[in-house]
Length: 295
Image (tube, rainbow, N blue to C red):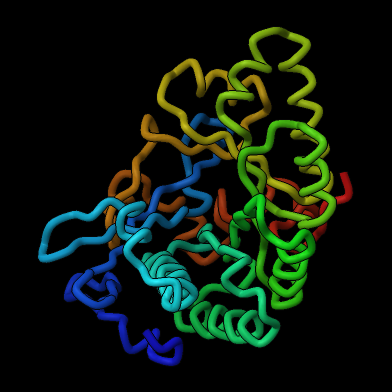
C-alpha cells in the first residue's frame, strides 16, 4: 500500500463512523474509555484508547493474526492507517475535552523523512478530527532490538509537534524510571500484575500513592487498567483515584459506540464550559500535554 494513499482507504459509514479498507480486510475502531471519578462517585470519560478490529469476508480476524499477515513493506502505512482511524472516530464522538490514546511503533519510522511525514499526517488527521494535538497521546512501544535512541527521537518529534506521550507496563524498575526521563510522558499505565502484588500491604500502597503524587506534580496522569472487580476499584480509591480502565467499567465498543447514553457528558461541558473530566488534571497547573516529567 502506497503511504500517500492512506486517506484514500478511509470510508465514512452511514452511522458516522470511519472504517478503512486494506486489501480484502475491513478495519474498524473499537474505543475503550478511561474514566475519572468526581467527588460524588460519578464516572466521567477522560479519554478513549483505540483498538483495531479486522474482518476478512465478513468474518473477524484476530488483530495479532491480521498484523502477522501484513507484508513488511506495508507495515508503516497500516500502522499509520490504524492511528488515523482511532483519531477520526474519537473526534467524531464530539465529547468536550476528551482525547484518544493510539499506539506507535518507533522502528517503523526510523528514517527521519518517514518520521516527519508521519508527524505531518498526524497533525492533518487531528485537524480533520477536530482534536488539538495534545489531546492525542501516542503510546510508544519499545522493542528490545530497537536502536537505543530511536524511541527518544520519536518522542521528541511528537512533543515538538504538540502531541502527548503515553507509556505502559510501569513497574517502578530502573528501566521504567529511565523511560520517564527519556520519553517525558503525560500518561503512565501501571503494570497490572505488579500493582496488585505491590499494594497488598500498607507500605506498598503508601509508596504507590507517593509515586502517583509525584506523577501529578510533573503533569503525568497515572492509569490503572485491567479493572475487573470491585476490589480493584476500591484500590483506585485508596490510591487517590487515578484514571481507571477495564471491562468492569466499560469494554471496547466499535465506533460510533453507545457511550453517550451510558456516560453522558456533564451539563457544564454541554453548555460550553470546562468539562468535569477532560484530559486535564483537576488542578489547573497540571494540564495534560503541557508539562514534562522530571521524576
